[in-house]
Image (spheres, rainbow, N blue to C red):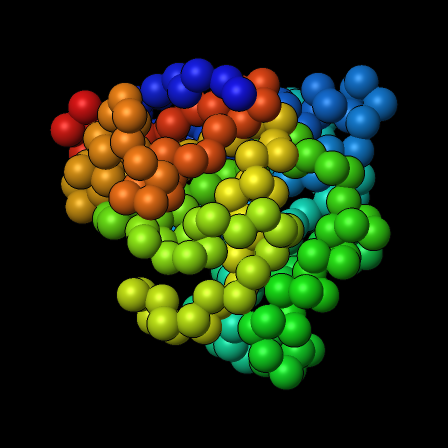
Length: 243
């Protein structure tokens, strides 16, 4: 697995613009090489900024990325109604996916309460979907990090950290809503590139813990994820303040 590289930007806006620009270029390069890139999306405030920048750069940049030939997945999702503002999928659609030329068949949202009777059923279904339509490795997987150093919906001390599968149900999340579906650590680690995108002073302790040598994944799940070829921590100045 790759050693982490840290890239610090002054503001959340600078961070979002940098990540969006690099992702646009990565997609274009992969397509030029004849690949259909599979991307793992995340949610949260900084992800929303990145998605909006992707939309803007798609219209304004000279880099030509064909979003209709990109396959989209999610690292985790809140098991709620599909129209809920808590859904990472809804956020991504509103700020990015519905604004660019994607192929609906290439968008693979995690199940909601309308498409699965339980988070367990939804997780099993998503695992089968990834087996059927996945590429085996994300070209780029983007991940946020919580103040407790959780990643996707893998929380410190939770038994899901020790399961070798594709997707799992999570209940009693310390951050609402309580019911979620998440990819596992082994699945997240099957990524060519992992990009952590982290903004805000409230994440600084978590970033420092995750990047510290010898940190136990059970204490900081973010410490347990890295890309096969590349791991980058994109931070704003506040998130990097404890490094």
